[in-house]
Length: 306
Ligand SMILES: [Fe+2]
Image (cartoon, rainbow, N blue to C red):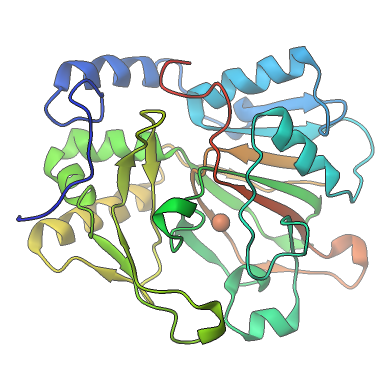
């Protein structure tokens, strides 16, 4: 391989040259790692304003797995202030203004014929394959965290698959460090320019799958399992690494499956996620509505030294 790699400091556990730091971090990471989605759950009285006990519980889980599911004890309200205030509570301020988002930067995900017709799958009821959010964004607009707040689930389906991207890194590196080397190439995954919709104005976006954030030393992942509108580096090592990543996701080891209920939500450091297809019912209460907030910030106090 003759590639440019994203910069990783020698002291980082994510440096391939520092196996000692990696092993120490890995051991800590895997110790008592949750095995069921119930272990990710925290009950909160008011998700817009968790109290200090609830916050600490949530932070403890977030530090371990990069994700937590909250469950509102009270009546579920359709209120976008819930994810906004919850985000603020955890240091998430810089919202990504999605082109199709509602004006306030928090997106209502629901079946909207006009939008899904334009090919934007998140607004349809089809299955979503494994991805991290904003993988097509420019380097200065990478999504480091998001909140998915459920107002109403679908009648059937709409279950999320979730896996901590740090766990995926571990599986790959343990299998073959060359996979990591390939996936850290600065141009391993390229999103072609947006030809379908020139108003979106997106230019070609090459980038790594794994990178280390200079500001925090945290691992960042950019990935989609989509095969359309994506160009992988065309060399043997990259192909092998992408295949190994697909195998790990298919093996389901470490994957949590969870269908968010009314008043429940996910707050995470942009972990890998998928969604099954869904079917809405005839009543409004059976029609899936999620609020999604995407942030450039990472959740406060969940860094490497946390
Ligand atoms: Fe997503």
